[in-house]
Length: 415
Image (spheres, rainbow, N blue to C red):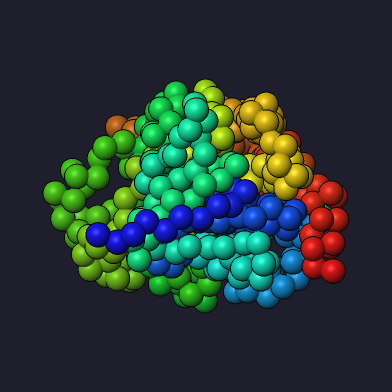
């Protein structure tokens, strides 16, 4: 049996997604010794949140990284629209948000994560351990003091002043801490798939609603990333009908893709996202803090999950960085992170739940045609109103900014 490797850090973060990597990067910039554990060997996992919103672009700008970031391959989305029946409704216009971050950058999540991790790994006090899965919490005298993990070389114990659970909606650490979770439910799941894109296709990302069908399409340059919204738990019934029936349903919903649905040659090309909407009532215990999906799983409505996770990470670094670095972190500081970020998560989820019930559920009813509700008709008719969903989707509630003290600490460390 391999000998257990033991080490000590000021902060151990479990989960190398947007919340975990951004928190690790920002804490390391603030002078904290950080280890991030990621159970996979790389970030190449498809059909994840692939939209970087203006709030996250603004964070990159404040870090002095926006220009470099935007040199990475991406598509700029300035408007969101929805095809309902035979006409298009314009829903959100991001061009009126503060420049130069007045668009959504459509970019594979692995590109974003590679970018953040590359910059983080340049800091001497940051360590990223791939193929290393956080398994349980270490406790002493009623306090969480670290993490036990499994790595490619064997068992690992990392003792830390703070453990951050950023291991997603199925968080293993959240379960180990038995933190109370409230589930708000969702009427749908999503089937993600890719189809080739041609130059003559519409030059924007959009949604398509027909009777009993709702498909979201994200422009990824040479292909469409498509999300077929289906009734909750309906994936098995669809699979039982065969891939041919699924291809036919996509072609009926989006006729210009009819000559390309053959790319879906088997069900392996279609990935199921089981939609969850939930939130912890308490995000922390002594020595442990949950952020991102581990604290609040978001609906895919609005595509804001990645950006809420980044906002959590920024708040975590702003509120805890200096205290962690100086060894004076208190349990009340962890509660302050929840106090700062709970309201944005709660309000965003309330809006998502309303959209799920009033629009998504009705759109999936195949017994009668979907009639655009008044709010969609107003957004289409009054251009100024499109700024409201643009601000909500693009910037969110209470957007975070990198604290000047963190920027100053990073400057001193690099100097």
